[in-house]
Length: 417
Image (cartoon, rainbow, N blue to C red; front, side, top):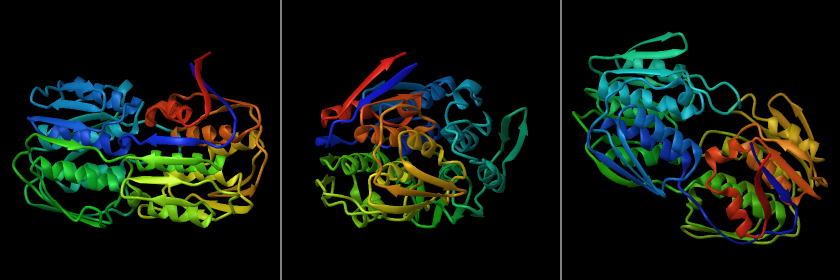
């Protein structure tokens, strides 16, 4: 099992280039199921979740060719409507194959998905919405079994904002007869990116990026070429890396407007930076101040940046109250940060961080993807050697994070034990 060994060694200094967004590329890959013609995706991150999704598509009979950050997918030879449990259990995003398979094939059989252990992420939203489109769905022996002779447009309201629920329904509705309206839809940039690909494939969609999305069904979709947006969470993680080390880091090929709320939060904490249309240059600082935050659906502060922000606040002056409103089990990284010397008190959905704390390197365990990143950040400023175990979580969602940090001056080594 690989581990990361980190030696704290002062401020970062250098350039980092952002990869494509994992959370945008995954639904774009499942959207390829909707067309019998080839789709080429560019700027796809080279991470484990992408490899798993490509394997899943191949299991359906599709032709998938990976060449660096370019992925070619031909859905013409699709021959199966079911997915293997061992693939689905490893990745939550596998549920995104349900809507496209149902729309194009009329049948889908998918195991209930797995993924990071950060709390309950029910598929009820997906199932209830697809049923309103006319699908018959049952849960048997841990599998979702769905069928539909034809899907029909419907007016659907999500009781709770769901990114994957919105994406699944969007894809299914592209081939449904009539118009589908999604109310209380997710507004994340990844939703807009998926809609852009679907429009390039011939879908009729408007309202993406707002709380109401309209999809006017068409008979079929065709092939297209699409470039995946830069990863806003990777971008934010490097902003945090510069902040926690008081370093100077230029982050390139990113979209700062996708991180407005996060950047505002960091500025309030005392971080100075310059922003262009496709770069963020974080400037050295002489100290950060505590600043409370609550995670919210986009355009609020992203839950996927909560763990990294907590690591930064261990080095800020004062007491920071962090409220997690999206997931009920997303403070597992706090236990590991406390092992390193952080002063953190957990009370239900809130964490009180008092800083600055002198962190000490030790053995820590990564419990999920973003928790892994928070431990890397802490290791950058910890005294001595930090060894992070179970870094397979990190490999699921970050494209060469350790290598990029090393180029900016970090001392990180990946090895096997």
